[in-house]
Length: 446
Ligand code: NAD
Image (cartoon, rainbow, N blue to C red; front, side, top):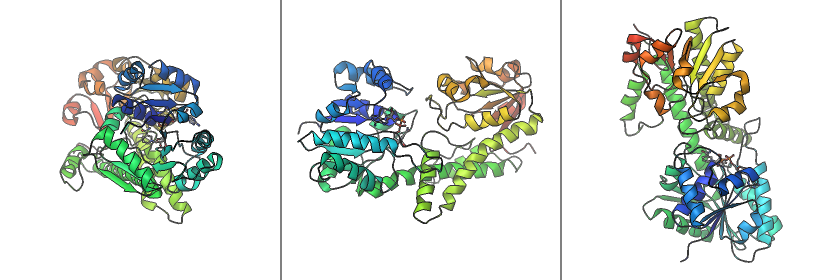
């Protein structure tokens, strides 16, 4: 069987990484976005955001001719067999998801399908609440195409689980593939495509459309719950002398029923997915008549971690007016320049409200951080310049290069060497010998 040709609508993290992933395995891919700047950059092999290995694979794909980018969705549909929808689904102010991009994209695809005779498979990969593919995307696709899902075109929902910062690796090595299918033929076609991409050892879960949609939310809500759980235990540690959450986590993580991942205490989760997806699941559950109290608490614990971090600073420094705080790391996690829901945002805003001045350093996120903070904070070009004359330092993002800093770096450059480790990357015994060291989940010295 000849490989399916693929189009992808929406060149964000998911769309672009999916596109280069397929092209790296020999598939021909046309990528579509309605942002001309993105399309121009991608056509030149320049990724619009930072992601390890993305630039290399993108350039290889463009050079080989397997990857193309365009603004023209009609041509992309006409010249391919399969289309992935990977547009954004941001939050509305009430926490529910905003389906504007999904609706406009489904409408454009539907109009393009009207001009095509051949069978075409549409796959919703964006994260959407249960019922969206069946009740919103499907009717829109049928409306302008004058075709029926299941006969005129195929339809699947295939949630994406990649992590920013390791998006290419995750795209090429998924733990499993979830396929929600409108009909067997659609599911079989997508299944065969993925087996060609990943071989036969990757597990598949085949189900209906709303179950596939719910799996994505249940997955992210579970991981967020794990983080808020360990942060709750971390906050208890801080009240009990001589305890340390990192050791507690180790003790838990060896239990195979628990496992060590997502048991790292800190200033909380951020990013474009966890906060948005947990909020959307809460809002959807409310709508269908169930108050998801566990998930509401998960969000509240997460919000409180940022406030709690500022309280630790205040407890040490007292009045913050005129105090200079060094912030190491701005992006929501290492290896990305994504600032969406980054924990640096509530922490810095709270410190600014209390009159502190902020000097910040992030290895790559300054330009995306500038669109959040503008000139309200000072940006410097190295960790050491960030520490210069600071009254206190908060480690916000656990970039690898920060792991190499030694207690003497803080002692030598800061006005007073006070470090708050918000991501638990430093050894408390080593640091407490030389500087004032506090950390999330670290009990007081007895
Ligand atoms: P993004 O916001 O980074 O990118 C979306 C892209 O879609 C933008 O480039 C935008 O210009 C484009 N777009 C919007 N409407 C369009 C239209 N009508 N035609 C063509 N292009 C259009 O999004 P993202 O972070 O890649 O996320 C996409 C989806 O995948 C979301 O539902 C998200 O929740 C989900 N998801 C994201 C991640 C992640 O780590 N970012 C992981 C898993 C799932």
